[in-house]
Image (cartoon, rainbow, N blue to C red; front, side, top):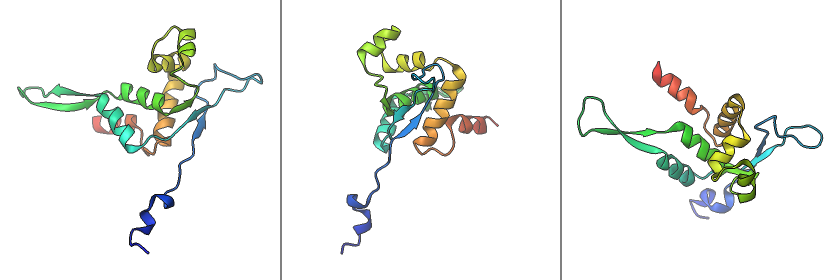
Length: 143
């Protein structure tokens, strides 16, 4: 038996998809909010998303010095879009019905209540394995 037997892919548990109803304005025939289906992102997918939302910001008073800054709103929006299995936010007909052209714009159109959107952001972060939300970390950094 290999000393790495416990680390073999066959021993790795699959993560189940999660379900969450992000808005009360989209309901089924019974009037119950429609649950969306979400998948877990891999670490590599998450890094790619974060990198795509990171810009270099000049350090005040330090010419030619820059630091990375993540646009957290954009990052969370992209994380939700990449995680969403159902509904298909990339579906052209669904985008056209709301008059938008990207999954990110469609997400804002579907969940247009700012409180519901904020709750969805908090839920998706916990679902993806972040125990503390980015908003919690920003508040802590400000104090």
